[in-house]
Structures are given as C-alpha cells and as structure tokens.
Image (cartoon, rainbow, N blue to C red; front, top):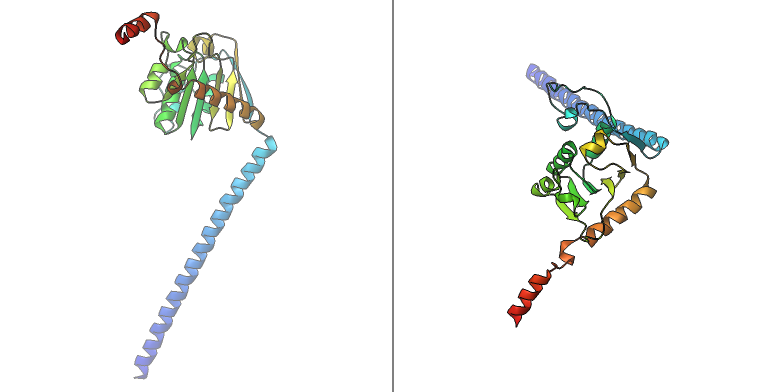
Length: 246
C-alpha cells in the first residue's frame, strides 16, 4: 500500500517536473522570439540611421558605357554562370542604371522620348511581370520608328500614352521609381545613346527634386489621356460625313 502511494507520488512529481520543464522551455522560446524581434527592429533602426546620416541617394552616371554582361541582374538565382563572351562581374554606368530600375517594387513612371534599347525594354517587361505598376509617356512620332520597343510594352499590357499634339515633341527622359527615386538626364533609351554618345544620368532620392517631376508626369499623363481627345477627321472624311447627313 505504502509502496503504491510512494510510486504514485513519484509519478506525480515526475509529471510536475516535466510540466515545469515544458513551461520553462516555452518561456525560453518566448524570450528568444522576443529577443529576435527586438534584434531585427534594432538592426532596421540602425540601418535607417546609417542611411539618414549619409543623406538621400545622389549618384551621377556618365555614358558611353562599355559592354559587359548584365544577365545576373535579370536572373538573380541562376546557378550556372553566363557563357556569353562579354566581361562578367564588371560594374558600369549602364549596369547601375539597370540596378536602379529593377529596384522598383510598387510603381515605375517612365517619360522617355526615344525607346529602342532591348535590355532596358527587358527590364521594364520584367518589372511588369513582377506586378510593378508601369506607366509610360512617350513621343508621338518616335514611338513608331524602326526598333521602337513601345509596341512590345503595349503588347505585354503596359499602359502607354503618347503626346497627342503633333506640333511638339515629348522630349523628356526621366523615370520615377516607387515614387521615391528619380532617374533623369540627357540619355535617350537607345543603344547608340548608351554605347556611343556622351550622355549623363542623375539618380537621386531628394524629395525636393522628386515632387516637381511627379507633378510633371501626372500632368502629361492626364493631358494625353485618349478619352479626353476626340478623333480628328480629315477634310475628306468631313465631306463624306456631310454628304451622308444631307
């Protein structure tokens, strides 16, 4: 009888010990989780402070840019190195431009006069595939020249508007990344401009500079909305219409 009670007491004590151990384990895990969250928050705070101490992004890129392989910027998880004959692992003005463009996560507003560069087109199409909202304003005449990539963007479902007036050219060359980064300069998005011309591009996150460019893009976007423009009839079409009405 006493032996049975002793055994029962031992079992209860063992159960209590196991419960205590489990509670202690959960407490340790809980404290560990809290420490992890606090550590991540502290790291984010530190990174923000370091960013703020450097000030907003300011970078200037000059062209022409030498030809190098940029495949790694498009396929980040590729296991095998690219076999193309171009130099690899070299940073250039063009590769930096691609890095800034591909940093978009939410939106990209692009205002460009001439757009025929295949790799830049590939970058825009990739952003669209990732779910980034892309809007493009371009020139009326240059959107249809040989080699223009505007048709490929439209075919992919990207919203494109062109300057509706035939009397002026939409000659801007700037991009707004996520509403926080401005890319602007003399560079047209053509192979000749990238590889042969003396060009410049400025990249900045200065809010004072971003604001006016955002306003200009929105003004152009609304002004060139096809819904606000009635189709223009030629004299011949007007005469036919008049005859039919009569």
